[in-house]
Image (cartoon, rainbow, N blue to C red; front, side):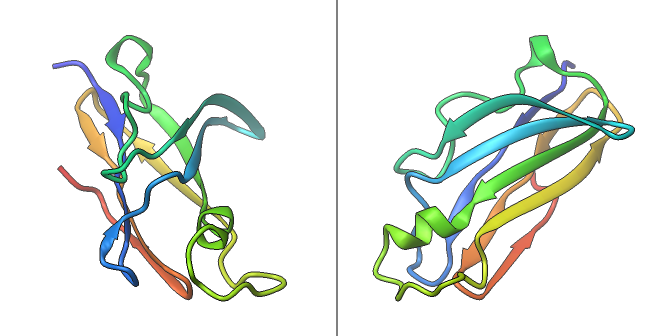
Length: 117
């Protein structure tokens, strides 16, 4: 099986997928952080394509950066300056060629993640 990476962002405060959130993917190698891709979530809170498809997959350390503050600014959440949650970096390792699913559950004052399926 080839490895690949997906995500899903759910707005738990509003009880719906987080549509229109910018997500960036970086590969981490020592002190080097290399930008690989930028995507935006669709109406289901997912990206239209795999964040890291099988033909670009490699084991190692990665970081997904979720631009939650800009997303929250587009909802009815009162604006703060600065926002409690703005940019959320999630750094994780992928050690085998399999499907990695890294979802984000978001509210204006908290978030959670896990290795999904």
